[in-house]
Image (cartoon, rainbow, N blue to C red; front, side):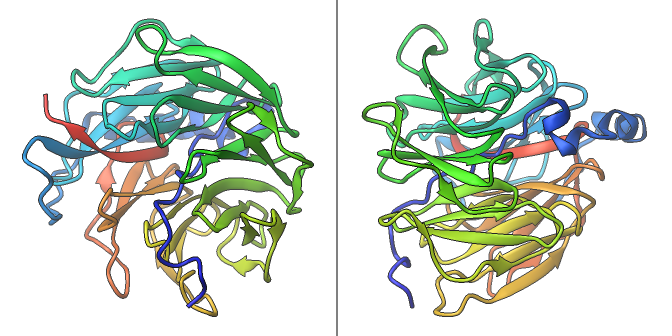
Amino acid sequence: MPDDAGCEQPGRVGAGRGGGDRQPWRRGLRARAANLAVLGALVAAVSVTVPAAAQDERVLAYVTNVVPGTVSVVDAATGKAVGDPVDVGEEPAGVAISPDGERVYVTNSASGSVSVIDTATQAVLGDALKVGAQPAGVAVSPDNSRVYVADSGSDTVSVIDTGKGENGEVVDSVSVGDSPQGVAVGPDGAEVYVTNTGGGSVSLIDTSTRQVAGEPIDVGGTPWGVTASAKRVYVTDATASGTVKVIDAATRQVVGEPIGVGSQPRGLALTADPARLYVANFASKSVSVIEVGEDTPTVTSLTVGSQPQDVALTPDDSRACVTNTASGNLSLIENTTPPAVQGEPVAGGGTPVDVAIGSVPSG
């Protein structure tokens, strides 16, 4: 087993996908919205079994719906909606939950802003924070002090100080590569990794200086999603051939051969071990499950809904949730050996794009 197994908690994948002509997922979404409208009022009561969370916590999934501009909240223990969808900005894309489970950060691609949801009330706090153009991926630092937003239309990363004001304050803007898309914070909080979709590279930001460290890492193709463990950084190449590139976090060099997955892979999620990687294949109606903890990674393919865009794991890694953009629903996967899709998809609240899951204090 390679030395990556057994490392610290992996960084969260940059889940958001921005707006404008730089964002292929937006093509045809409005046309699909009419067919999906009937799903907006439903969240199927799917019977699932998950390990019991602490009595004062609930495990909730937050799902951005680019149409009609809402965030759906789903209880992971029951598969049911928690209240009505939360209205946010125009064309919400990326979503991330704070480590303490008290805040959810949503990038609004068409509004150029970030909405902050209070998980105690499931309501938006104050005014949306203005960031760069077409914000896409978003990630929160492990110490909960900073939020990083990939501004795909500005070629920047906005930095939010969560300790200022009611819902934080934008304190910096860091120039990165062309069309930044995904963003992930390393498990120690020292580095932020940003995929530059238009530049075929990954930028690394030193969080102590809030400056780009060195030259971008050349990964080629169309880098999209990113997640990081202490020793490895995983990047999806959203081309038709579909691969995952692996970067050594210490040397900042691509290592090994690309791992073949489905067509146009987007979001990805890494277990805490970190031994297993889930990849949503947008053009293949599938999720690839990669055993990255093995000497030679093996790949299993699971069939899900149409245009799977993102995937997230529950805090205990017992289950993965996949957003099926064109199907307008969510697929649940049991993180067992072997992994398996559980039951029928859960109906969504519109056109789902990204998902974040966390343990949320009960109100």
